[in-house]
Amino acid sequence: MTVVFILWLLMMLLGVPIFVSLGIASLLHLLTSDLNLLTLPQRITNAANSFPLLAAPFFILMGNIMNTSGVTRRIFNFANALVGWLRGGLGHANIVASMIFAGMSGSAVADAGGLGTIEIEAMKERGYDIDFSAAVTAASATVGPIIPPSLPMIIYGVLADTSVGKLFMGGVIPGILMGLSMMVLVAWMARKRNYPKEPFPTVTSLWKAFRDAFWALLAPVILFGGIVSGVFTPTEAAVVAAFYALILGLFIYKEFQLRQLPKLILMTMETNGVVLALVMTAVLFGWNLSVAGVPQSLGQALLYVSSNPIVVLLIINAFLLVVGCFMEAIAAMMILIPILLPVAIKLQIDPIQFGLIIVLNLMIGTITPPVGIVLFVTANVAKISFERVTKATLPFLIPLLIVLVLVTLVPPITTWLPAIMMGK
Image (cartoon, rainbow, N blue to C red; front, side, top):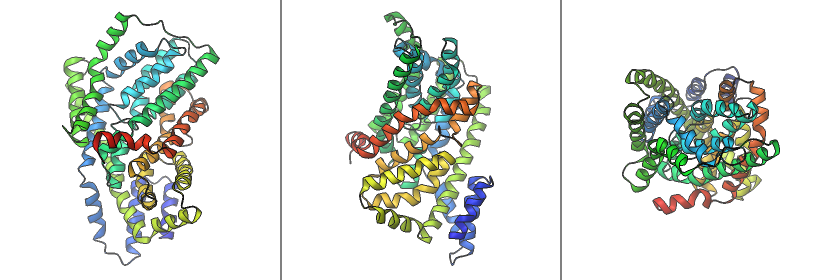
C-alpha cells in the first residue's frame, strides 16, 4: 500500500483529477493484493447508493437559483439596515448577510461569488479599501458550510455514518460565534481606519428592508424548523429548499425566468457529478486504506504521542490546517475521514464535534494559500490579484482560529443544541 500511496501523491502533484487518482490508486492496490476485483464495482455502487447524498444536487440548485433571482441583493440590503449604522457598517453587513445566506446555500464559494459581487461593489462605492472589502467577503464566506444547510456536513454524515440533522444543529452555535468574532475584528479595524457608518435606520426604512427580504429570510426558518420538528429529513429539506427558491424567483420577486432553469440545472449536474465521482472513488480508497491497516497504524501513532483526546485533537487540527492549504475541502474530507474517524471513535470523541472540527478546519483552508478556492473567487469578483486578497485576509484568520480552538476544547458548543433539539 505504501507504493500505491506514493503513486497517488505523485499523480496529485502532476495535476491528475483527484477522483481519477483515487480510482487508479485503489485499482492498483486491488491488483497487487489478494482482494477480489469485484469489490471495486460493489464499493463504488454502495457509495453512490446513499439517501443523504440526494440532498447535494438540490442544495446546489437552490444556491444557483438564489444567485440569479434577486435574493442575495435583498439579503444584503436587510443586513445593511440592521447593522450598517455601526462603524464600518458595510463590513458588518457583509458578515451578517453571509450568516443569513449560509442558512440557504451551505456553500462558501456560492457566498463569495453570489453575495460577494453585491457586497464588494457597495463597499467600494462608500469608500472602503478594495482589499478590506475583498477580505471581509472571503472570510465571511467560510460561515456558509458551518451554519446549516451544509454540503460538507452531508458528505461527512455519509462517510461517518452520522446523523446529518444533528450535524446541521451542531453547526449553528459555531457559525454564530464565527460571525460575531469577525464583527469584533471589523469594528476594531473600522475604528482604526475611520471607515464610514450608515445613518441609523428609521423604523420605516428598517421595515421596508425587512419587508423586501421577508420571503428570502423565511427560507432558513422553513428549513431549520422543518428539520427540527421532523416534518422532513435534511435530505427532503434540500428538495423543499430548491422548490422554495424557484417559487421566490418566479412568482414573488419575479426576477427569474423559466428559460434560465435548464442552464442552472446543467450547472448543478456538472457540480454534483464531480462531487459524486469524488464520493465514489474516495469511499473505495478509504476501504483500501482500511484493509491495508493505515487508519489503525495512524491511530497507534497518535495514541503513542498521547492518549489525551485534547492533545490528539490539537495535532489533528494542525494537520488539517496544513492540508487545507493544499487540497480542496471536499476532496480532503473524502480521503481523511476514513483515516481519522477511527482515531476519534477510539478516544470517545463525539462524532458531531469531530465533524465540525474537520469542516471548520477545511473551511479555514479555503482562505489560505496556495489553493484557497474562496480567495481565487473573491479576487476574481474584486478584480484584484490573488496576492492582495490573501494578504488582506490574513487578520481574519485570528477570529476563525479562536473559534476553532473553542470548538475543540468545549464540546458542548457543538453537541448541546443537537442533544436539546433532536435528543441523544
